[in-house]
Image 1 (cartoon, rainbow, N blue to C red):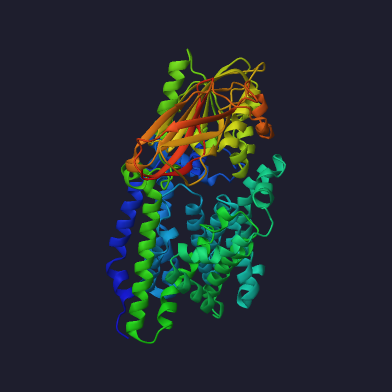
Image 2: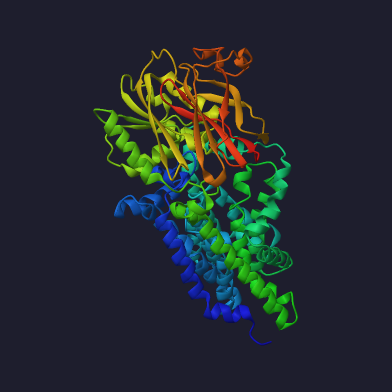
Length: 632
């Protein structure tokens, strides 16, 4: 049969396409700020240990290498992960070559670039990059050791398994796949009596020492998080979308090809196909089966990737065996490769778009663009300015989330005062609350700083009303003389921070909470004429509401701000059912009703929000309400 497209493209386009993706990854890796996981791995790297509450040491070790040599920058943190992740196609080639030849290896590497999560691997500093690379290398050396019974190959295999256990708990599915392979492949059972293979297994088990030691000394905190606390362990029908989601993330044509490849490998009798099937099945079946019971934000995105990569080795031959005519093979190749490469580029651009927020906001607004990996250097500089302006000496830095504290530590490594965080919810969800406590960065350590001055920061753009109220109340419990200083809007309001001064210690008499506001009138989509009646309630726990303004936005993006005097209050005893309302000094006179002249507004649809400012000077916005101004 004449050469097909996959053979030609892999010979002529593998390196140019790889270079293009590499350049895109490098650009975005240098442009994007670090997100919460990455910055925490860097923070761990500044406190070396064998294991941490979230992971063994590998991610922290790699995250610290670049900054140690080249200083603190996002690219420096990501560089080892970037190099390892970008090497995955080469590792796939190395793994495939002994079984499918040089040309087959190139084709497998080509398909690796077409698998979006694999082709974009290395863009971020995540443990999957070293875990996948180590896992594939361990499989390759295991097959070589099995074939040659070379002691050096067995030792390398054991060493790789040990390193794999030092990356993530999920690495255990690689040796689980090998165990399944030994169970179903009779010729491999002799390994159970092979001293060299048993020696390699003993070496591999040494990699469990870090996590075993950590759990032994900390009441099994890390294991409890991963196997109990992180997951609800209750059936959620949304988990049944795991397979369709994976099909979309992997691009449907390539996903179908990989599943078909897995089916064919399950019927093979030789060692390599059976091993790759067992490893793939352990990953794909495990995560698909657990998806309805576990944390959906983790099991539906990147975890199954380790099951796809071994299937790439025989995916080209599976594709060809599906069709008898060259034209159909080429059509399938076009579909798989074009959709796959488009998916990889889309994945890179989708994540990387955060580095282009300032450029894209005029077209996309602030709602569609995530700011998790943007605006952090500005936050660090702004926070440093607030500390210099409002304090005579460097204050303690206290944040409402752990990644804000880590970002400030990253941006100001020489800051002379300690940094703390009041984060408990997200830190607990991410398995990091225990580690923050061990580092004495949490609220329990903060209370020991009696009499110290602190700059307290809340990232309001990530908090709803109840969350903001809870974190301010927590700060009030830890300190006295809390005072609102002001707020900063970054990335055109996509990131919003509130700043407070706080003296650590007991004795606060009142806790100045942001105002809470509700609109009763107008009703949603109400049609009005020249006047607009605005009614509802507003209260600020502890200090009361000082001013109230109606903000109207609509036709031609015009914005109209109308004052609503706070002294014109109505009795609203019914609001007592809302937590904190009765602690407003003006309660029950917290209602309002105002007739606003809007006759100058042109006809069209408008959005109304109320901006309430408490007596401490902190402003907050109500939920939006839509109304329609009719034509005269």
